[in-house]
Image (cartoon, rainbow over all chains, first blue to last red; front, side):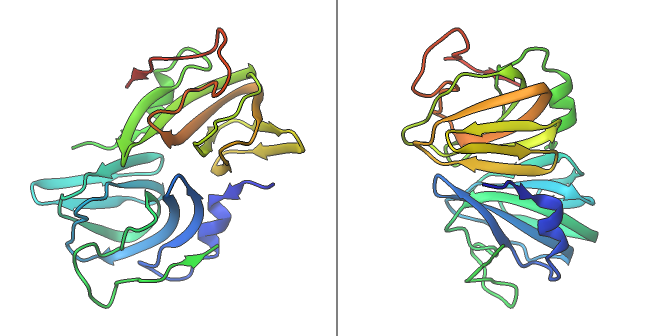
Length: 119
Length: 119
Protein backbone atom coordinates (compact mmCIF):
# COMPACT_ATOMS: atom_id res chain seq x y z
CA UNK A 1 0.00 0.00 0.00
CA UNK A 2 2.76 2.43 -0.94
CA UNK A 3 2.94 4.73 -3.97
CA UNK A 4 5.61 4.35 -6.62
CA UNK A 5 8.21 7.12 -6.31
CA UNK A 6 9.53 8.02 -9.75
CA UNK A 7 12.69 9.65 -8.34
CA UNK A 8 13.60 6.48 -6.46
CA UNK A 9 12.77 4.33 -9.46
CA UNK A 10 15.11 6.31 -11.71
CA UNK A 11 17.81 6.35 -9.03
CA UNK A 12 17.86 2.55 -9.15
CA UNK A 13 18.26 2.36 -12.93
CA UNK A 14 21.85 2.24 -14.11
CA UNK A 15 21.36 1.32 -17.78
CA UNK A 16 20.18 3.18 -20.88
CA UNK A 17 17.41 2.23 -23.35
CA UNK A 18 16.31 -0.40 -20.83
CA UNK A 19 12.65 0.13 -19.81
CA UNK A 20 11.73 -1.01 -16.30
CA UNK A 21 8.09 -1.76 -15.50
CA UNK A 22 6.92 0.21 -12.46
CA UNK A 23 3.16 -0.13 -12.79
CA UNK A 24 0.38 -1.88 -14.72
CA UNK A 25 -3.24 -0.99 -15.32
CA UNK A 26 -5.90 -1.83 -17.89
CA UNK A 27 -3.45 -3.79 -20.02
CA UNK A 28 -1.11 -0.81 -20.14
CA UNK A 29 2.30 -0.51 -18.53
CA UNK A 30 4.07 2.36 -16.83
CA UNK A 31 7.76 2.09 -17.55
CA UNK A 32 10.77 4.11 -16.41
CA UNK A 33 13.66 4.36 -18.81
CA UNK A 34 16.82 6.40 -19.14
CA UNK A 35 17.73 7.59 -22.61
CA UNK A 36 21.19 8.73 -23.68
CA UNK A 37 22.27 9.38 -27.24
CA UNK A 38 20.36 8.25 -30.32
CA UNK A 39 17.84 5.44 -30.46
CA UNK A 40 16.80 3.64 -33.64
CA UNK A 41 14.15 4.99 -36.03
CA UNK A 42 11.07 2.81 -35.58
CA UNK A 43 7.28 2.76 -35.35
CA UNK A 44 4.59 0.76 -33.58
CA UNK A 45 1.94 -0.43 -36.02
CA UNK A 46 -0.93 -0.52 -33.55
CA UNK A 47 0.20 1.09 -30.31
CA UNK A 48 0.27 4.75 -29.31
CA UNK A 49 3.14 5.64 -27.00
CA UNK A 50 3.28 8.38 -24.36
CA UNK A 51 6.60 9.93 -23.33
CA UNK A 52 6.51 11.93 -20.09
CA UNK A 53 9.83 13.55 -19.20
CA UNK A 54 10.84 13.39 -15.54
CA UNK A 55 14.30 14.96 -15.87
CA UNK A 56 16.28 16.32 -18.80
CA UNK A 57 15.31 17.26 -22.33
CA UNK A 58 14.08 14.72 -24.86
CA UNK A 59 14.32 15.41 -28.58
CA UNK A 60 11.65 13.36 -30.34
CA UNK A 61 12.61 13.28 -33.98
CA UNK A 62 9.75 12.71 -36.39
CA UNK A 63 10.02 12.57 -40.17
CA UNK A 64 8.66 16.11 -40.41
CA UNK A 65 10.33 17.78 -37.45
CA UNK A 66 11.52 17.54 -33.88
CA UNK A 67 9.46 17.83 -30.68
CA UNK A 68 11.38 19.01 -27.62
CA UNK A 69 9.96 17.54 -24.40
CA UNK A 70 11.13 18.89 -21.06
CA UNK A 71 10.41 18.02 -17.41
CA UNK A 72 6.70 17.94 -16.65
CA UNK A 73 5.83 17.69 -20.34
CA UNK A 74 4.54 14.74 -22.32
CA UNK A 75 4.00 13.86 -25.95
CA UNK A 76 2.03 11.04 -27.55
CA UNK A 77 3.47 9.38 -30.66
CA UNK A 78 0.49 7.87 -32.48
CA UNK A 79 0.69 4.33 -33.83
CA UNK A 80 2.21 4.11 -37.27
CA UNK A 81 4.30 7.26 -36.87
CA UNK A 82 8.04 6.80 -37.28
CA UNK A 83 10.07 8.34 -34.49
CA UNK A 84 13.60 8.43 -33.16
CA UNK A 85 14.19 9.45 -29.53
CA UNK A 86 17.39 11.46 -29.15
CA UNK A 87 18.90 12.55 -25.84
CA UNK A 88 21.98 14.79 -26.19
CA UNK A 89 22.29 14.41 -22.41
CA UNK A 90 20.73 11.73 -20.22
CA UNK A 91 16.94 11.97 -19.95
CA UNK A 92 14.61 10.22 -17.53
CA UNK A 93 11.39 9.24 -19.27
CA UNK A 94 8.15 7.68 -18.06
CA UNK A 95 6.40 5.64 -20.75
CA UNK A 96 2.72 4.73 -20.86
CA UNK A 97 1.95 2.13 -23.45
CA UNK A 98 0.37 -1.30 -23.89
CA UNK A 99 2.08 -4.11 -22.02
CA UNK A 100 2.81 -5.70 -25.40
CA UNK A 101 4.79 -2.79 -26.85
CA UNK A 102 8.31 -3.70 -27.99
CA UNK A 103 10.76 -0.86 -27.41
CA UNK A 104 12.18 -0.95 -30.95
CA UNK A 105 8.77 -1.47 -32.58
CA UNK A 106 9.10 -2.79 -36.12
CA UNK A 107 12.89 -3.03 -35.89
CA UNK A 108 15.07 -5.62 -34.19
CA UNK A 109 18.61 -4.76 -33.22
CA UNK A 110 20.97 -4.82 -30.26
CA UNK A 111 18.73 -2.37 -28.39
CA UNK A 112 15.64 -4.60 -28.58
CA UNK A 113 14.42 -5.71 -25.15
CA UNK A 114 12.14 -8.74 -25.32
CA UNK A 115 11.95 -9.14 -21.56
CA UNK A 116 11.69 -6.12 -19.28
CA UNK A 117 12.88 -5.79 -15.70
CA UNK A 118 10.39 -4.89 -12.99
CA UNK A 119 11.02 -2.52 -10.12
CA UNK B 1 3.72 19.13 -32.82
CA UNK B 2 4.11 20.49 -29.29
CA UNK B 3 4.24 18.59 -26.03
CA UNK B 4 1.60 19.00 -23.34
CA UNK B 5 2.95 21.02 -20.42
CA UNK B 6 1.38 19.81 -17.18
CA UNK B 7 2.21 23.01 -15.30
CA UNK B 8 0.44 25.13 -17.91
CA UNK B 9 -2.50 22.74 -17.98
CA UNK B 10 -2.99 22.99 -14.22
CA UNK B 11 -2.54 26.77 -14.32
CA UNK B 12 -5.55 26.97 -16.62
CA UNK B 13 -7.83 24.90 -14.37
CA UNK B 14 -9.85 26.94 -11.88
CA UNK B 15 -12.30 24.30 -10.63
CA UNK B 16 -12.04 21.31 -8.32
CA UNK B 17 -13.06 17.67 -8.95
CA UNK B 18 -13.36 18.59 -12.63
CA UNK B 19 -11.11 16.38 -14.80
CA UNK B 20 -9.82 17.96 -18.01
CA UNK B 21 -8.66 15.71 -20.84
CA UNK B 22 -5.11 16.60 -21.94
CA UNK B 23 -4.21 13.49 -23.93
CA UNK B 24 -5.55 10.26 -25.39
CA UNK B 25 -3.86 7.02 -26.38
CA UNK B 26 -4.89 3.41 -26.84
CA UNK B 27 -8.42 4.10 -25.59
CA UNK B 28 -7.03 5.61 -22.40
CA UNK B 29 -7.19 9.24 -21.33
CA UNK B 30 -4.72 11.49 -19.58
CA UNK B 31 -6.64 13.91 -17.39
CA UNK B 32 -5.58 16.81 -15.21
CA UNK B 33 -7.70 17.50 -12.15
CA UNK B 34 -7.43 19.60 -9.02
CA UNK B 35 -8.65 18.03 -5.80
CA UNK B 36 -9.60 19.96 -2.67
CA UNK B 37 -11.35 18.48 0.34
CA UNK B 38 -13.13 15.13 0.39
CA UNK B 39 -14.46 13.28 -2.62
CA UNK B 40 -17.14 10.59 -2.48
CA UNK B 41 -16.39 6.94 -1.66
CA UNK B 42 -16.71 5.00 -4.91
CA UNK B 43 -15.26 2.23 -7.04
CA UNK B 44 -14.91 1.40 -10.72
CA UNK B 45 -16.13 -2.11 -11.48
CA UNK B 46 -13.89 -2.77 -14.46
CA UNK B 47 -11.36 0.05 -14.69
CA UNK B 48 -8.05 0.51 -12.92
CA UNK B 49 -7.18 4.12 -12.18
CA UNK B 50 -3.74 5.72 -11.89
CA UNK B 51 -3.21 8.82 -9.76
CA UNK B 52 0.07 10.68 -10.37
CA UNK B 53 0.58 13.70 -8.13
CA UNK B 54 2.02 16.80 -9.80
CA UNK B 55 1.82 19.15 -6.80
CA UNK B 56 0.60 18.74 -3.22
CA UNK B 57 -0.16 15.68 -1.13
CA UNK B 58 -3.01 13.31 -1.93
CA UNK B 59 -4.50 11.08 0.76
CA UNK B 60 -6.05 8.05 -0.93
CA UNK B 61 -8.35 6.49 1.59
CA UNK B 62 -9.01 2.80 1.12
CA UNK B 63 -11.21 0.63 3.34
CA UNK B 64 -8.11 -0.81 5.01
CA UNK B 65 -5.87 2.25 5.25
CA UNK B 66 -4.61 5.43 3.66
CA UNK B 67 -1.97 5.84 0.96
CA UNK B 68 -0.15 9.18 0.95
CA UNK B 69 0.90 10.23 -2.55
CA UNK B 70 3.27 13.16 -3.01
CA UNK B 71 4.76 14.97 -6.00
CA UNK B 72 6.45 12.59 -8.44
CA UNK B 73 4.64 9.61 -6.95
CA UNK B 74 1.79 7.55 -8.36
CA UNK B 75 -0.59 4.90 -7.11
CA UNK B 76 -2.90 2.55 -9.02
CA UNK B 77 -6.31 1.81 -7.53
CA UNK B 78 -7.35 -1.54 -9.02
CA UNK B 79 -10.86 -2.00 -10.38
CA UNK B 80 -13.40 -2.99 -7.76
CA UNK B 81 -11.51 -1.34 -4.91
CA UNK B 82 -13.43 1.32 -3.00
CA UNK B 83 -11.51 4.54 -2.56
CA UNK B 84 -12.03 8.12 -1.43
CA UNK B 85 -9.55 10.79 -2.53
CA UNK B 86 -8.95 13.36 0.18
CA UNK B 87 -6.94 16.56 -0.21
CA UNK B 88 -6.51 18.56 3.01
CA UNK B 89 -4.94 21.22 0.77
CA UNK B 90 -5.30 21.57 -2.99
CA UNK B 91 -3.59 18.81 -4.96
CA UNK B 92 -2.84 18.65 -8.69
CA UNK B 93 -3.33 15.14 -10.00
CA UNK B 94 -2.73 13.50 -13.37
CA UNK B 95 -5.08 10.59 -14.05
CA UNK B 96 -4.51 7.76 -16.48
CA UNK B 97 -7.61 5.68 -17.05
CA UNK B 98 -9.90 4.40 -19.79
CA UNK B 99 -11.73 7.09 -21.75
CA UNK B 100 -14.98 5.61 -20.43
CA UNK B 101 -14.20 6.05 -16.72
CA UNK B 102 -16.77 8.11 -14.82
CA UNK B 103 -15.16 10.16 -12.06
CA UNK B 104 -17.60 9.02 -9.36
CA UNK B 105 -17.61 5.39 -10.53
CA UNK B 106 -20.62 3.48 -9.17
CA UNK B 107 -22.04 6.58 -7.47
CA UNK B 108 -23.93 9.50 -8.95
CA UNK B 109 -24.05 12.81 -7.11
CA UNK B 110 -23.42 16.52 -7.62
CA UNK B 111 -19.73 15.80 -8.30
CA UNK B 112 -20.44 13.44 -11.20
CA UNK B 113 -19.05 14.74 -14.51
CA UNK B 114 -20.64 13.08 -17.52
CA UNK B 115 -18.92 15.34 -20.03
CA UNK B 116 -15.30 16.38 -19.58
CA UNK B 117 -13.60 19.54 -20.77
CA UNK B 118 -10.58 19.28 -23.06
CA UNK B 119 -7.49 21.42 -22.86
